[in-house]
Length: 84
View: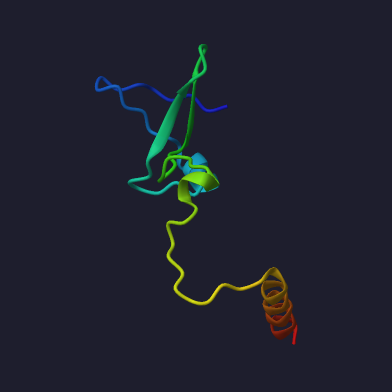
């Protein structure tokens, strides 16, 4: 365990070994989670969590409707092409 000091401005320096382990670089936004007896730092999520119902239909598709069989055939074809 490493010990760090709180500056007069309320800042701390996350040790380089920790920053490297989590690939945190300059400008990384972190969420601070109060656990009652301490805090946890986690990378901030760039977007608010959403459900599929909130985003379904946001991407417009102008082609003809495709059946599930056609989708499965296209997926199989793509997988076979990647394999060879």
